[in-house]
Image (cartoon, rainbow, N blue to C red):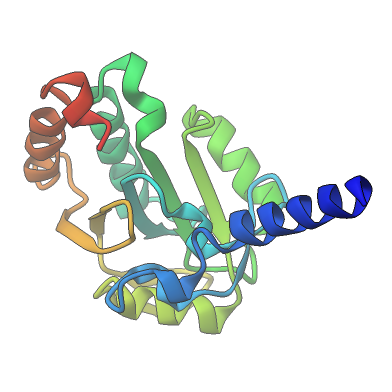
Length: 196
């Protein structure tokens, strides 16, 4: 009887924890409603809604990009530096590949290492349909042109803890300023406020 009760409690806890960030529990305008299974730079499968629970700064890039994408990444790194070191785990940073046919997990991993991205960052690869759907949810536009190049928006999006769009700006070093200012304001609040 005790064993049966223990197993029942474990089963209930498991079902609760697995549904905490289920897409059905998220607001209807949450970007995470896109769903789908994505691969990280560490070749781990994750559900998009697993990003819920803390603010995320997200952008769509590709590792073969030599123009806009490096600037987008540097802009996002500036935002990360704006967060006090002891609170950086309270915010996530996400890069989604626009070229999943060539950006495999090992490619994303090498890119992350080259750019000095730490464990607060996730680099994601989905299938082409998922990437297109996510791009649309983020009001982004892109078109694969030739020789693996992609013409794309250089938008950086700040999502709240439920995946709702809080702010969007240009991913340039000057364009990122509104997000820098917002993050500075949020994380300069009292510790209890900053961890909301």
